Image (cartoon, rainbow over all chains, first blue to last red; front, top):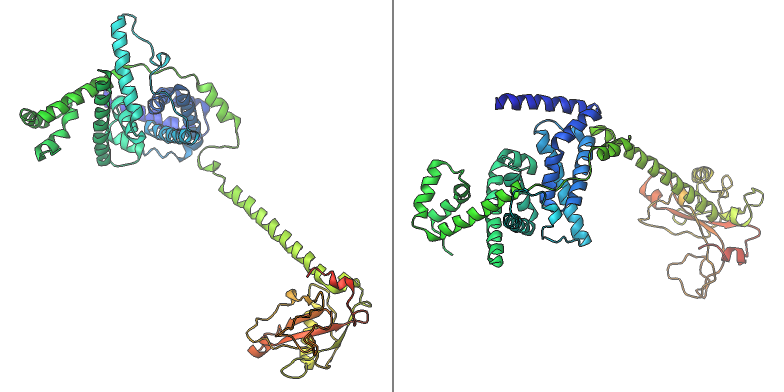
Length: 196
Length: 268
């Protein structure tokens, strides 16, 4: 069943791509509906800022529409979009460096998202504290390590998919992921020690 | 800190052990090592904490995006020149624009050069372009053979007739007294387009070491302010011909004793 669903989705994706190449905006709106949430989430985890993630998401789809003719279906549409998004995130971070923009690494309540109404105040406070630690740890990591952590641990992509997004081999992804996890673990341990 | 080979092998597996995704064989090997290695146990605990935090972070809802499909649709539709895929790459259009721009620049440069050359011509600068007012040729010879042959004179006249600037022609069969000439060994042939009058703006009292016969008087001073045309033989003959250089002394009735201000105000 899973295989059948995957094949069906692939066929649907191919048809969508063909229609998009012909300039069908309706088909592209379906692509947008299918992937915009994941693209936004990826940009948000990389950048850590909602407005910038919003801009990057929109730019990703505009660029994807303009370049859909060069998409050769060698990878999935999802990894192709994430690749564009990752490139735009890197450009955005470079522009921050140039403009000396720094964002507060503390998590704001409005970006923490909705909380379960059944949770007590203590549970909410604990969860916020945990999220804040990982948020800070991710912010403190080099962008390349953050990317790979987000793609594998948050977006749950396979090694092959990550290799397609980042444009490197599966072996390289495994090595980089090991180093990124070790770095994240050290940062989390450091932050937890400073909390205590 | 020193890690044994066993430690290094186990460390690679710790994340998978912490999140419970390790293969059975890897898990058994890691547990066998962890049983007697406190450092690796501490590290496993640290990985577990990180994995729990990551799992919590993954479940955390991401904020809502403010921008939707309408914004993308508006941006995509706003610029109809940006077509899809390869077609939007403007390489041919850009190349055409650069080509046209380069061509216009070349034409402009050529026109400027022509205007500058026309200004350099004394016949137009001093007495207009009228043939009646143009100066005559007093005499032409060259140093190493003692005189121009008829063929050479015809060749020079032919060159002058095709010149872009107006230059007085030699009379047919002209041969006269040697006024000035310098052999220019190794000097490349001066193109007719580069023909330019040499005008001395002021009599100089400075001795000229390499001056021609008529440029220096007995006291080593410059004598006359006459425009001279320096020509190299443009014939494609022997090397001797190529290196032969003529100084054509142009003498007009009005400029035979010309020290007038119009020449002094020449751009050079």
